[in-house]
Length: 203
Image (cartoon, rainbow, N blue to C red; front, top):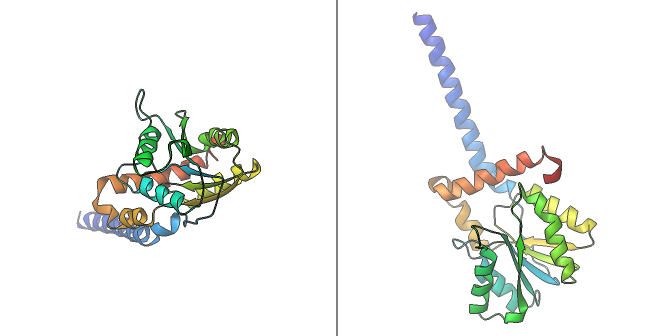
């Protein structure tokens, strides 16, 4: 019995050690999973960072004032029956001083994954005559998601740069494991990007 108990204890300690090692590796390597930001002049700023907990609207307004683009497209799927976060972002940008005719909205359908949204984004950009786009995204967008977006839009003849508010990235990664919504967003983003590799429409 004692031998059996020691074996169980040893196995439990090994499992605990493995979990601890993976957790430490995740903490250390997590920032490397996310794409770095880059800013470039473009025909359109595509605003996808529609989250009241982040500084996406203020960052987009700053990019507009600094002359990176003369038109902003706020895009999102619906959050409820008739509520699109993109509409709120547009209203906020106008409150921040952007001209009404310089900000438009692109309502996207609800899909199974981000990859399925890309054709709708391309269609919306083409309708506005855009051949280059500066995408303002959630700071936790993964390197794979950025590469997928860049590849698909490049095939459609649209040059892509992606960026985010630097303060959002700092805030998101600062003690993320202590905040439920940060941990949920970060872990969910990494898991979704991994699962997307298994399904052709999402790749």
